[in-house]
Length: 367
Length: 230
Image (cartoon, rainbow over all chains, first blue to last red; front, side, top):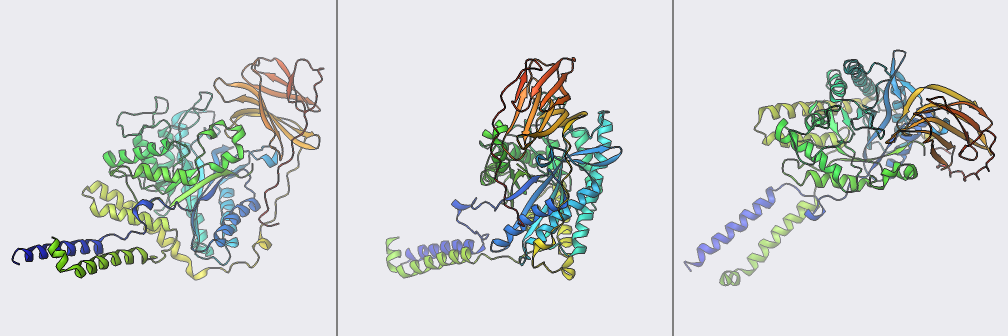
């Protein structure tokens, strides 16, 4: 009796401790084996090939119609990729992608026109989401750090100066767009952000047309300095040639001296920067590259990257597989891309994070 | 141990049941948290940052994360700012869609322009020809294909079909430019000044301007995507 009594107390104490741990533990929504399931409903992002208002309205209407047809509150991020930044006769704008419905002509859109066109997208979403007043779309107004702004003077200081101009204007455009959303009453369902596809590899002909970190950081820093503290941008680029582990010595090359520190900075370190990287490759390699950048940040720069989501190009590959052989290995489904990113960042305590919220898959506006 | 279990079997069962019940309740009653203003990612990101902030011991990291967090909170505040003037939704969205822009007038013929990189077509283009062949609108570019090594080439696109292809001219120098057209027979010139002929209808370079090649059969047109507002 004397022996059994302490045992009983011990057992009860153990059970009490277990019970209290259970009661205090964080709330788990799913059993552990389902921790990466389900991936978020993916949205469709677009390479913009025709910026006419009715075309933009239709794109927004498509997403609004979809969201209204699904029970509950949907929350999407879409990137509208307006192509490369371009200057014609001193007027700043973008050269959008070639339009197959108009002789592959590339429209030049000024900042004022981009601003008008993204509002039409938002209006289309608002109009077509009908009775659904709770679903939400974050619209990333996208560009790229590709090409030389239509300049013959490709001196780095000249290009950086233009990148600074563009970054400042881009932040202003995002702010004005959100002010419009607020004053129009749309902001419960619409948020505008900047977006930029930052890369640096050679084109297939061996020529470097993407920009250096010196030029590109001109854009990000100017965005940061002019965002009014209320605008952000997403980097939806690729980590070209990056290693799959953190490396203080890695640099892409001497022409494009990108380091993991640069990638971290433009994707997360700059205050308005958030990341929704391209996770195209079927073997998960791109996700491991991004996890390595995050770990680099965690080890050396003070913070891992909290990824907002993943971008894939399954639909673009479905449209143009015949003319793009790289699609054979770069056509992750949205669920695969998102899942690879989740697996890569959660494989390491230095990079683990809550599940990324978004999955978006890009396609051409026209086949 | 056995004696203990024998003595209090119902207590063990009861306590285990309570624990399992608690776990189930925790799982099944997971809340739908109050819907925050704006996109949920902002709130979720903010929560993730707050969690990191709570365990951080590095002042630099804390300052960095706090600034990110502040930015997200400001966005939330902005997104929730227009509850007072939310407009009504249209009963028929298609009735108020913007008017379609008039289709640009298409001028058949040759157009030359300063060389420009078409990254989506993997080419650096110098010129374009447009025209109708067998009732289908065809666009042809000439320029340099951005491959390793770069190749002078011609691109052919038949509108609204899957008929699109690149025709390299390995024997040409650097780049090609369309200089004139006779119907669908194009005269091109490379950087060295050498002349080439390309028959768009036959999709082939000609060995001489007089060569006659059979016209290719047209591919079927694509099924149009359903209109959001028919």
